[in-house]
Picture 1 (cartoon, one colour):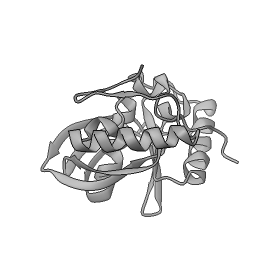
Picture 2 (cartoon, one colour; picture 1 turned 135 degrees about the vertical axis):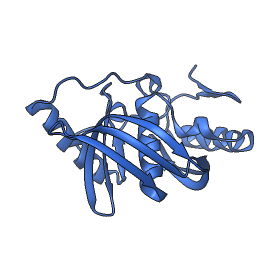
Picture 3 (tube, one colour; picture 1 turned 45 degrees about the horizontal axis):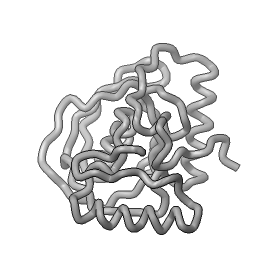
Picture 4 (cartoon, one colour; picture 1 turned 120 degrees about the horizontal axis):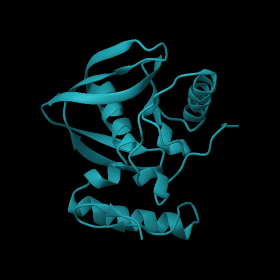
Length: 179
């Protein structure tokens, strides 16, 4: 059983910008380990701290059997544009074509305090952008086109009817606003 419950759309914690991590100690390392277990149990390839109710800027990931954690990540540059089908553990069972930058340059830190300086593209680029969005209080649903938003409203309504989702969020043309 996963040590944490993954928060889903409608939970106010997902709309808040996370604060920087300023201390890495044994309890933080335990939280990271528990987040890996939660992510694998879901199953997922990335999990941001706010998704388990922790308002700190870090996330765990596992891409190509290369697990890691990045603390206080920042996208310092992005290039190009790519469309990719994207889902989210906090919006269970739903997927949409999302347009994001095709390449990013990310800086952050690992658990030992070493600086990470990463040039990412393809799937890793997508995962990092998605998880950094969570740290900024942004859900993938905010990247949808107007047509996709209509589809999202219907899909979320269906989930609520089956008691799998929280009360209805207001998916406005520019932003997702919780009511």
